[in-house]
Amino acid sequence: MLTSLFRKTLMVYISVAVIGFTGLSVALNSEIKHFLAQQRLVVLNREVQEMLPYLERATSQQTLDPAFERLVSHDKKVDNTSANILLLGDGSGLKKIQRLTSYLISHDQIRNAREVKRVLDGQRIQFIGPFSTLDREATLTVGLPIRRDGSVVGALFLHTFVKGLQLGQVTRIIFFVAWPILLLSIVILYLTTRRFAQPLVRMTRAVQSFGQGNFRERISVESKDEVGQLAETFNPMAIQLERLESMRKDLIANVSHELRTPLTSVRGFIQGILEDVIPPSQHQKYLATAYSELQRLNAILNSMLDLSAIETGQIQLNLEAVQWATVVKSVRDRVKVRMDEKQIEWKEFYSDKSITIWGDPERLTQILFNILDNAIRHTSTGGISISSVVVDRQLHVRISDTGEGIPQEALPHIWERFYTRRSGRTTDRNQSGLGLTITRYLVELMHGRIHVESVIGEGTTFTLRFPLLGTHTTQKSF
Image (cartoon, rainbow, N blue to C red; front, side, top):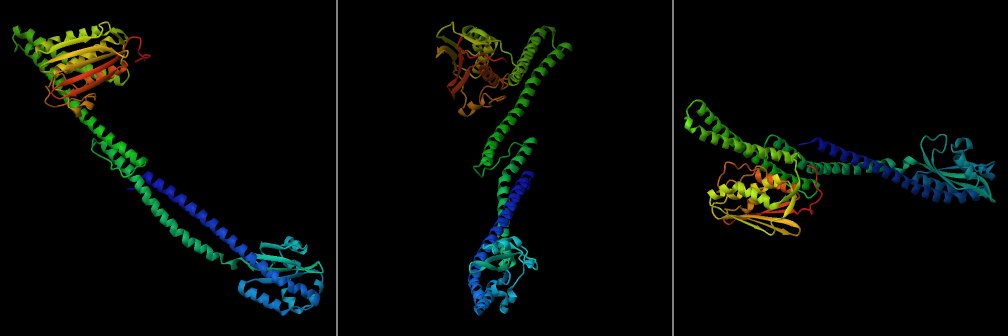
């Protein structure tokens, strides 16, 4: 399939190739013409040099050696040359030689008067251009002065027509050699450009499929160049988009369920009370249940609002000096009832209970609560421990449980938005898949780090690191 990019690239390649071959052909043709002309001028110079002694002897002997005519006839037959003689005055007797009459030419018949003057001044000349007024085509001309007793008495010109160099044949040869090579080059350029453009075409189709909600398209990588690297980058992106789309659908389903369930319950309780289906003695009980459902609904909405605020950079942190032990005590008091219900043992350890860090106390409480909430949810027996120690001017917090653990293949995904692993873990209706995502963002916003390790059947350990008060970096405005 020809794309706009393919056509543009191909046309640019073909244009460059045609211009290049045309320029090369013109330059090659010109050089060959110049070479042939130079070669012919060498021949003309040799031949005129052979003829000149016969004329110089004729000026003194008043007779022309027949060898001169044989030489002129031979050169005319072999090299298609013509000889002309220009005489000054009486030409020291050359005009009297009858056999030279056919070779004589007058000043008026020669077009290039400047070159004629030079040769009569005793110089050797050679030029390309029309020689006589009767010539319509360019000739290669060589001229030598004829001397007698050291004085110039005339000039001998030997010339041949340029068309006699068979330059037309040279041009045809160049044409028939260059154009097949050019056509072959165009075919190669077409195949190369098509091979280059095909991955881009496939990526375009894949993106169009993404727009229609199909994230299963993948690009085969056939090269190691920049296009191949783009294809290699495209496939992981497609996998990630497919995963995000799956999580988005799960989120919609989960959130719809989470929102519908409490709303349905609350509506049913209120309707039962209004229609006297629920006796007055039970009103307090059902109102308390409705209130609990509304609290759960409010928690889900708050999590979604928190995540939105974090991702858009609109979250506000009230940073101040915070004593870590007070954060732990606050969260412990909130989860104590749930732990007692499941008979989970609680352990705390501090290297120093006065450890103070720089952070937002409310968000620090939210971080610790989210981690402990997960630990309680997935721990049936055993206990939960929290260890807070100072290492290298940082607060290191280890929250460990004896729960069911997290599979290694799931660990990289627990921080992703809306990720909820469906397995043998206890299902909790409060689980939305946003808690750990928000936790990681909040930790990083307060210049901390979070890490998790887990072993199936043995438990999970979250490690938090926060800078101590006085060692934090310059805080940003959020």
